[in-house]
Image (cartoon, rainbow, N blue to C red; front, side, top):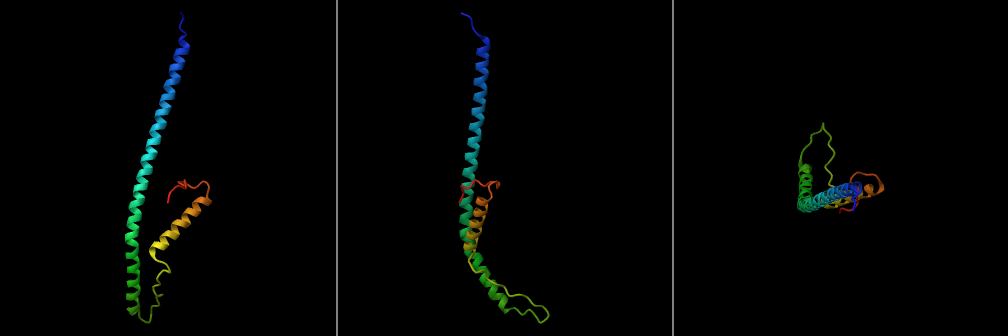
Length: 118
């Protein structure tokens, strides 16, 4: 029985290359999954912080408007009165997020525009 060493070596190299490729693909997949879980975790933290801080920002804006009404600006300086936003902070944040999502969907080659978040 004669062994064909060329086929044996060729098959061994092919299996080795395929194994390295599959290992690299598996490492990449694991890395992507880890990054996705970190992003999801950070989004939960950001949304929790946002829900706590938004009402406080609205309250500070209202108090600032009340304080500025009582200040004497003098005759020489004309300062536009402080105007409260028409919506609360949470609504403005939601509007901005929706606007950004729509811009990402309209731009086909936008970086990080995978469209799966939120």
